Image (tube, rainbow, N blue to C red; front, side):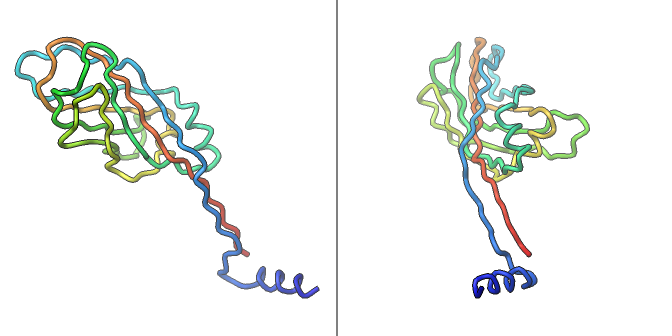
Amino acid sequence: MLRSLAIAGLMLTPACTLVDVQAEVQQTCMTYPGMQIEAAPPGVTHLSTNVTIDQLDAFHGLADQGFTLDLESGQVAAASGVSSFSFIQHASVSLASGDPDSTLPSLAAFGCEACDGAGDTLVLPKITAADVAPYVKSGSLVVSVDFGGQAPQMPWSIDITVCTTDTISYSLAP
């Protein structure tokens, strides 16, 4: 009986949160393979390319269930035409909504200024802490990649991977 009265008292207390739970559930990654980059004319030191990604199924279910999809990591891997990124001095990946009517701003998501391009993979640190769920809900993502450095004079391709940390929150107040 005393326990019932205590619970009832808590339920009637204004501005008191009874339960506040936040759980990091998983990390979700999306890889877009084989993004083609054309051969650069001699002397070109900046390349920019983008792709619109409509296949966001892994992210859609989470966004629709109320998960926060926080940017976690980005990676660019050489797929063909180059065996290392030694020619890259700086790189960045930005994300935008693919909906032309969207008012969501473009996000500078990942990047490096003095990139370690010794291998065939660039791991790009997160630049912006942002929830990309609204971008996913817009239907598609435009992923833009910018490279600075002496560009290859042959065609090449990359695989781009974007990962999020997925969090769900729940609060119960009287």
